[in-house]
Length: 285
Image (cartoon, rainbow, N blue to C red):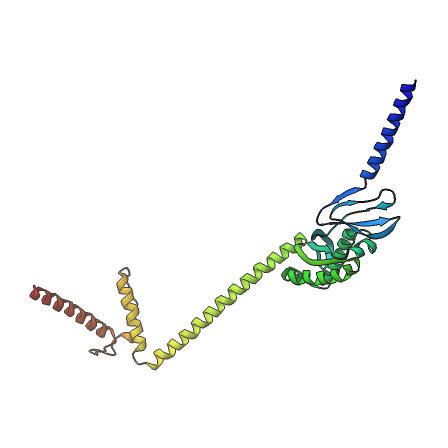
């Protein structure tokens, strides 16, 4: 009986000691380098704990949550937002923010991540509502900067610094996408037609200048026709050649250095020159 009583006391004491040990050991906390924990004593804020090993007195002290001081990212979207020209769009964006005043983060807002995200959504909706669809598609970076400045002003009282807001994607209705594709195709066709018309205009202007030059020269037009006939003769394919009447001699026995007779004389002079060159070559040998 005596041994049993002593054994019971020993077990009871051991359990009590173990309970006390667990009780005190439960107050030991380890926080990472970028973590800070608000420290409450009897419900009153007493500062922050961390990083490293800290001790929180059980029952009377409490650490409600842990704050990360690193830069954080949060993706959000605005659905069915109307632009200034009444086009419904869905915008996907991402926000980068960082807690800078931890006391404000603890005392002024319950959930700083949720509050910052909701503020970003409403702000981006307001910004999109004040611009057109073309501006939204063409100036994403500028719109992100405007939204960042407004969000940063809203979250300053919460101890949050918003460093950047980036628009990742803009989704528009399928029917509008098809209409925009048709519009882009029509614009490309218009530019092609304008370019072609400009080329024709410049070519016509050059042709008018050439016509004036031919008109001012007595034999210019005849030389041009002779050049055309010469090129046709080089092709060696045509059996019929249409010759303008103004290139014909003026009358029976007339000799014109730029008419058909002149063209024949030029050809004969070329043949004689080739024969003379051949004879000189034979003599040299």
